Amino acid sequence: MTWLITGGAGYIGAHVVHALRAAGEHPVVYDDLSTGVAERVPSDVELVIGSTLDRALLDRTLTDHGVTGIVHLAGKKQVGESVERPLHYYHENVEGLRVLLAAVTAADAVRSFVFSSSAAVYGMPDVDLVTEDTPCVPMSPYGETKLAGEWLVRATGRATGLATASLRYFNVAGAATPELADTGVFNLVPMVFERLTAGEAPHIFGADYPTPDGTCVRDYIHVTDLAEAHVATARRLADAAPGTDLTLNIGRGEGVSVHEMITLITAETGYDRAPLITPRRPGDPPRVVASADRIATELGWSAKRDVRDMVASAWAGWTRPGPNPSGG
Image 1 (cartoon, helix red, strand yellow):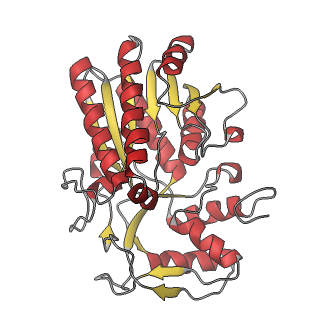
Image 2 (image 1 turned 180 degrees about the vertical axis):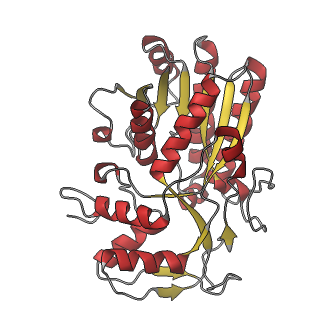
């Protein structure tokens, strides 16, 4: 099959492209390069530069490349920014998805659609393990746009017979190769790297949560495992009955506290600097850990890599020669 990967030059998107290619699929990348990096796209993979809001370009791309499936990762994803710019997030994430789906449904050849969702749809769940049936109460415009995206994808599938899947990512880290590492400094691992390499103490936002060590507990997933989950999902949809709809958590089902993660990072990097405890951030739930049972049942997929793999591979990317977040 030919898969159009929107956002395929981004951190997660590039890993999905490489995984699909390694699995014998034919990916085509569609990215506006607002945050994506063209050099992440393999030289033998076509890169179309454009926005999901550009209906005419989408129509041409789907036709010219004979696209039969979509993996939609393009969109804005910073929680704090979404609070400051909610109209921008709804325009990019929801309207961009609507335009893409309109192009997809007009293209008779496209039969499968994989949507990049997020654990942010759950908000602050008061449960030990978050299942796909846990009520969704997002706490930011970003989370709202992801939940609205799921509704839009599912409704389109029901109306048109498009086979769909919404994948709810938990906390993504690591890299398949140093060149594909995360260049943003928005998630815990690169944020700690940035402070350590600047000679500063990493921050822990609150140490008085009702958790074993008082810091927030999260479920971390290696980006390579995440990419392989996309391959498994894409193949399932390619063989699925029309109108098939899946909603799946992608996580390890294991909680790691912020303090535990920082301890692991300092040990891996050799920077011996105690973290600084600062006040809680508004909206941080004490614990968000995935139940990964449904994806194991539906796809036979489970994560293979642990948090040590995530930290080591992310550090290799951070310290790689040439331009990178650490300035090396």
